[in-house]
Image 1: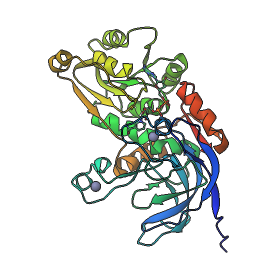
Image 2: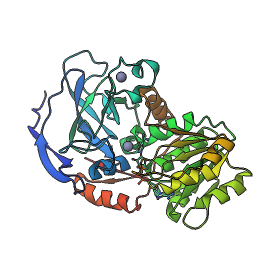
Image 3: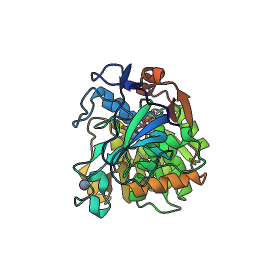
Image 4: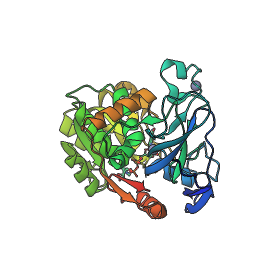
Length: 345
Ligand code: NAD
Ligand code: ZN
Ligand code: ZN
């Protein structure tokens, strides 16, 4: 027996940039071709949701919209088209909500760069609501038997740092600096440890550094108290081979160059609006590679979830209710969140 769906449901809606989200009822959407309607169990709150709310980036979403791209729930209705998920399956939305599937990026394993990509909780309504739509060709398949609250942050934070670490080409036994130990960074420490790297964590808050040590960082630096470049150069005897910047302050991006070893690779994940100073001489003379990295492909996400399902990654997650989203976003703005917060419906 199927129960009729309500015509409306409650969601957190961005109506105007720079204002609190409105907790209100919105219309139940109908799944279109290749789409599924999902009843959401939980959704992580990413700093990207805060950037979206503030209208921080040059490419902006269009209010009103529902943020959230770390949602997990159950498929309750399928739209037209062939699907390889069925009603009752547990799936997730992600930042890479869909892509065209045919452009030069899509057909060469670089679908996150697709010009026609849709972004969950940004160009498409996301998981800060009791129901959401996903494109079943791109939705995450959640492994059986996992804790959904802990799995949620893997859908963005996890896959992003996993991919970032991979493209750093840092090998087991080499040093990896994780700069910024928030939602992304505390998970990055764990992936780097699981990949056999020697992890150094940098943040501006002592509790974040304690969290990094708990997750396996062997050395930590408080960038508010000492120069991270000098501290890392000394500890590593010449600089870190890899550096992953997840921090939300532009100062961390310039400091990454000072922490690098000759021929090292710096990967930028963090997206604070702004710029950073970079010495051309340093980059050339030390033969540094600096690269940006945006979330990950469906294959990266499947791999990131597999690390998690095998027990190698355990995000630090606390839960909140949908009505508490504004309060959580304010704590995030102040850098006062331990790991991730996820909404529990
Ligand atoms: P968060 O708020 O949970 O964590 C940010 C961390 O940065 C905090 O621990 C904070 O103390 C730390 N920090 C602030 N200033 C610092 C400094 N000067 N030096 C070192 N650390 C500093 O945020 P999050 O959810 O982890 O997201 C981090 C950033 O990554 C955001 O800008 C977000 O938009 C971006 N992001 C990018 C991608 C991508 O695909 N590239 C994906 C997800 C998130
Ligand atoms: Zn995110
Ligand atoms: Zn494409």
